[in-house]
Length: 435
Image 1 (cartoon, helix red, strand yellow):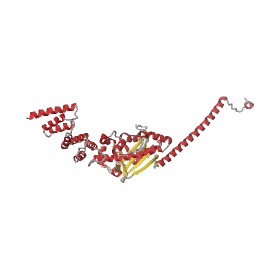
Image 2 (cartoon, rainbow, N blue to C red; image 1 turned 120 degrees about the horizontal axis):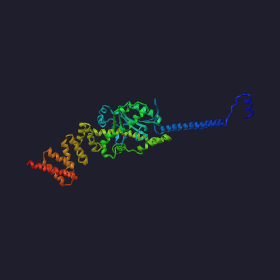
Image 3 (cartoon, rainbow, N blue to C red; image 1 turned 180 degrees about the vertical axis):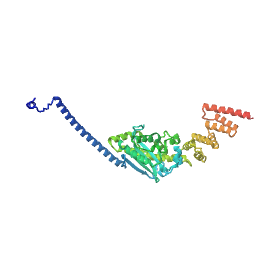
Image 4 (cartoon, rainbow, N blue to C red; image 1 turned 180 degrees about the horizontal axis):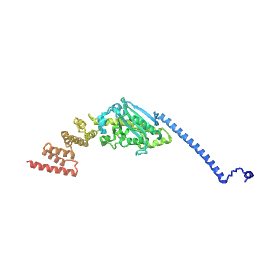
């Protein structure tokens, strides 16, 4: 102990004895303070650098994509607005040919009669680009494409959440637009887009009537009316094979989620430019696809860029939805033209429709046309033989038809041959008993 400390002890003064442990604690506290200062300074610098990178990325985005930052009660987001003029062409169609489709036919496509009470301008076309293709609670729609008809033109709005923090503001704007429309048009939206957006509204504690709007999902009628001649019913396939839309340099859908994550990391706006264009084309194509399907449902004559089986599929759809007037309208179109250039399958489908609607004379005309050439087709021979026997009461002609088909070139399977032989035996016995 130092002399000064001894004196203080003798005089009774307080002496602060610094032990070796206390000295170490002081040094450790000082070291911690210094480390915290360094870490805080580094975090502040990193935060500033990140904020600067985000600001630079957002500014660069506005230079490449001609949109603007929008602010509402829920925050900020990026909005791109576009107008596709009526004279503009999308594939085989002008926008002016798309903006006034028959609402009754649209209601039949949706299987929702209520849609028939609206107008084309009441429709909200919707398509999303998401952070994942499988859906689920963790998937976010970072880009929401909207479209509607107004004044003969097609208006497009694309809502971008530039990061996860802007989702609430983007959804708030979507709810505002959706509240001005009366029904939705999507492509696979019933299974994906609308369910996903409904979940995101709930997670953000926002109200929306989006899921309550009447809904025309184009995937299902496209598959039923056009699927017979396509390898698949994806929108990009329908564009290329039906609508005449050729996409140049388009981004494949599976690549879009990763591009968005890359944008969040490096803030390069070029990553998003292609996604905007991909989404824009999707929205416009839904409008032209709607018009194309409606034209088939209300056909007066076979249009260019269609196939006879498209109309037959539409007639079957109308029949299944108890619309005999629409079915008859399509079938009457075929009565006014020769079916000689139809495929064998098309002739079968048309004859079946005539038979189901009670237009047997028209069905017979097709069966006779099909049995007038070789190789004989079992369906046509069987149906015509039944009509000759039971309706025309001409067992002789029926027997001759079956005999000729069995003796000459045909495509019969063994089971079909057995069926015709049984019919021939029965016809012979019936003719013998009538003598």
